[in-house]
Image (tube, rainbow, N blue to C red; front, side, top):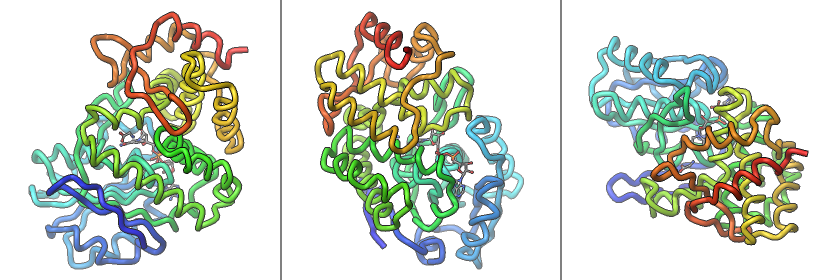
Length: 360
Ligand code: NAD
Ligand code: GLY
């Protein structure tokens, strides 16, 4: 087992990465300071892993809440259902919430934990590749709004993250590919050697080679932990984690939540950001080709849906947390391995990119 640390002073916490971690009760119990514990999961993950998690909680007063599965349920309404459960069960302020699932359950459970009685402890047990390499680490929690993705939320750090690589065995290929989009992001924004490694090891990753997957999870978490430790609330470098996300969130919202997986939308958005970086004169044609080819090898989409035209894109992109005074700001690439901080984008350049990239 590898143990990394997100260094945030007295709110620092470990990320455990390895095999068989769901069968190690002490990993759980050392981070639970209460008798009351609630496990939040969904109807897909519950039959697979809920019992294994519950076995670690013998001797505690344990409740469970099984939510429907899907991005379209990542709403205030379903978080309110978590509050209903906690109140009905008379859970106190020292209770602990465990999020067992992918990014949707992690974000919702974390947000419920941040709000319930102004904050209760929570543990992240990420079960998708995307959640293990990104969403479970760093304390971004929240829900979607019909007008914008992740628009309601809070920064709220967990007590620990337990990333058991074995649970990825039951993840389908489409979800694995979507997770790889966020893995590639780290290579693009700050770790050129990792990007090279990903190009050379993509076949092993797609074949679910355990060693390759563990390396990719660990390297991603090292990058994420460093960024979050430096800039917890995204006043600077943390924004680089949003490479491709302004386009991606527009695609998710515009197509309807759940149509594109988050990682798929991010893959398209990253290609759009790479194309824009080329138009700015930063990336060359060969760099852009490398990026697009890597996504293609994984089977991820690389062009935006035809039904979201450039006007609709601009409308959707106007709702983004990086925007400032109504101005769209994007993370772009200076080169592979170096991202910009949010840059104001000339509307004509953006409009031209939206009209032409992937439209022929
Ligand atoms: P998800 O949570 O919807 O999970 C994907 C699918 O896989 C679901 O159907 C789920 O039930 C299923 N699943 C989960 N684990 C499984 C397993 N081990 N075996 C079989 N099936 C399993 O999606 P996701 O890709 O994990 O997360 C996407 C969400 O994360 C989005 O809402 C996105 O906004 C959010 N996100 C948050 C952050 C953050 O920093 N908080 C970062 C990136 C993404
Ligand atoms: N996934 C983006 C962030 O954690 O900041």
